[in-house]
Image 1: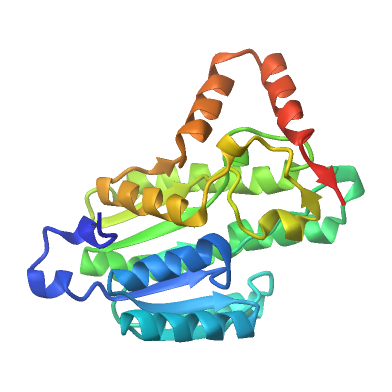
Image 2 (image 1 turned 60 degrees about the vertical axis):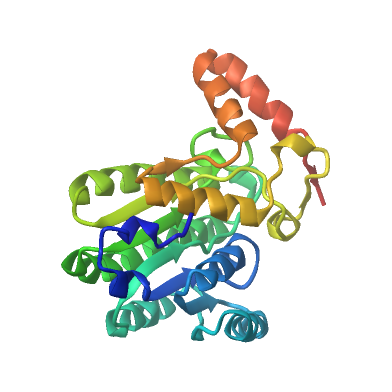
Length: 276
């Protein structure tokens, strides 16, 4: 299903030009998969991330493969000035109809033993930056009566795990925020979603400094599959999305058992990690 199909009630001339999409954390993983998928649907892209070389390579690939525009914004969204610059870019972009707030990182480890600066950096990136960019994009989308905003959370937002206290907590904020925002704008033509993927085959766990090879293979997804489920769900108006049958079953199981059993289950999963 096309990611622009949530505007299928609009005239064909509008549908054929879905507009611009901004993807943060676009240099790799789920962000890059979103960028390629949206380009395939005809979106022009603004690609934002810290790593300029990877952004340039992806922009060149997208322009060559899909014939759309692809521009880059080198930005670190833990820096307030870079958030401000991206807010200005949003306000200056006509026909921004898709915002993917994907940028994130995890300072994996015990809360009491992890740098408070790193923990606060996660809150700034996952919550403050996402709020500011959403607030910047929403008025024009509402005025145009079309658009989509996807905020990347995590399965840990729904199933708290040890060594992820602030990561999961900052992502849980996004679940509550997006569900409430959906209720405010329902029927406006603009759709919002919070995407809660589980284990995804990206560089994320390597950057965290952990070896997740002990996690059962059935819990892993490819980033392209996560993106397909997300965009299909956005077209259907689904607000909280847990991609992957195994992840949905795991989430459902944790809702049906007492907290003590849920803690044992999550400790088992966390035990599959080896910290480097």
